[in-house]
Length: 346
Image (cartoon, rainbow, N blue to C red; front, side, top):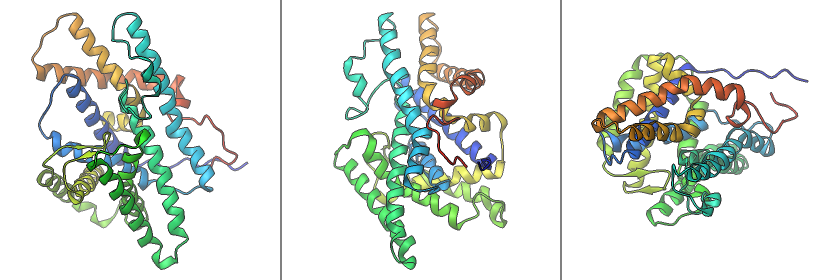
């Protein structure tokens, strides 16, 4: 049996993921408190999720064929989604409702992810959306490989942009596909961009352009700030910005975060959160809910800014204990170990 080779870790990628998962947590804390707007909300919304789709494309591999690829994505994405949907989106709300801590979610919560696309512990939608994005891209990757070699790359880009445009237009026309399939289509261009960044750039490696990482990052953030002028929601697949500026913001912001992270290298606590960002993603909704519930039960009335900062900081610090716990006792449902074993795991 071949010995599995451990994949290399890129410290700056963990830092980028850590920065973004913290932005996600902050956004959800603010939303829970009913804060309709906060500084830089619109610019941040344009690239917060595209970064993750770009990174997934950056590390895309065809492996040993479509079946093997599917098994890997089932282990890493679909099983965590299914587990935390059943437990934290369905069972837990009924338990809390029994003790009169939350309203009864109703029987429809068990299949809400299909059409309704609204349910408790909602951040896990991303795992299902990313699962479909991976499968769609693999499909068009296989199609592009059948083209003559000189047309293969162009075909892959054209197919990715075409599917992205279809997904984008579905959102603009208020046409909803089940299980976040429309969002998956919209995000294909980000995935494709990540794939080409891996193949044709030295983004993951030290290179002579690294001395320009901070200026390029500032340029990217500047473009996002100038071009973002309306609401962007990937979870709802709703976009008020034009097609070109939506993707320009998403790609510019994603690259800016990566280049800034590469220039910094590592921030221990933030990088740690990034390495285990899936654990934060699937649970932070309930963690922040519990903190807010305690504050309200004890009638603690701080200013909104202080309350938001407190909930955010405490939520993140609690993961210094939650992450080791989940690594020890829940590795198979947090993408740390495989549930479905493969014959050749290397």
